[in-house]
Image (tube, rainbow, N blue to C red; front, side, top):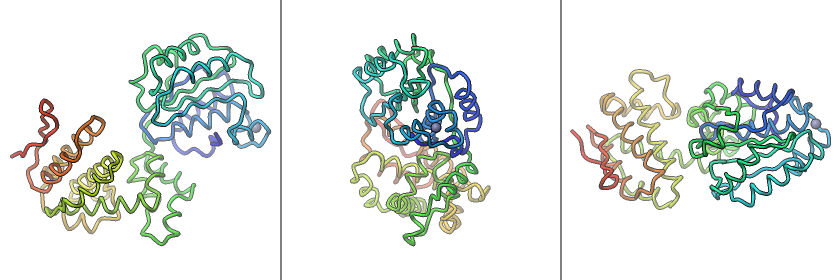
Length: 348
Ligand SMILES: [Zn+2]
């Protein structure tokens, strides 16, 4: 919980609102919602720092601030369970401890990351805390899927929407953090912050994930496959290798990379400065003119359709090779038969 408002780039209006709240009278409950990886938890951390100690907005090392940094502040509770559900015992404990007076800070502060993972019972227990909050309590719920939260919970929270960061803001943020240097020091061809910001699509979390040497190598491999498919010479062994990684995340990463490649191919002849993969212009120049804009654009929609299916229990092992075959031949169509399971049909 050691982030400071001064270190956060972008989300200016949200930041201003929260700084004012921390200096004045904060609401009892907030819901920070927006796409994954855009910095909602970073902002929650900065807000916590400012609530615990007003001086922390510009940096402070008082005992209370140091305890927040160490994650041992007695008035602070963080529920963050990753992929697991947040269960009744956790919210019940949260409620109980919120009833007591805060010890060092003006508030008890409860942060619930991925609040959409609350079980129904945990929601009911949390609702009591939101409906009748003790005076000195601030709850911060964070979610990328706010629709999964009950309306009763949402209606008790001040909703704070987060959008994607602009490329300029994200690049500035990455530069300020020295991101890209881990790859640079190994002598790898490296994502400059600006390229990383393009690839991450306005999501700080994505930029940090791609900034790992292994991840960046994977991106290159995914792009190689994409160019082979685009050139009409796909190697299906490679798509098999992706599927053998047995990680749904790998399939999603591959599909997103494939989508960006197709998007770039569709833009190359009309707006080359708007491409994402600025390190791949040689491939784009070689391949883009081989098919029409309409064909590349319809390929984008096809990939989007398949990406949309990755959240449901589909058999990627069957779907991915069919998709690659379809993309490698010209004149794709986007017919998905939901009644018989996801299959792709050869179009005109
Ligand atoms: Zn302080």
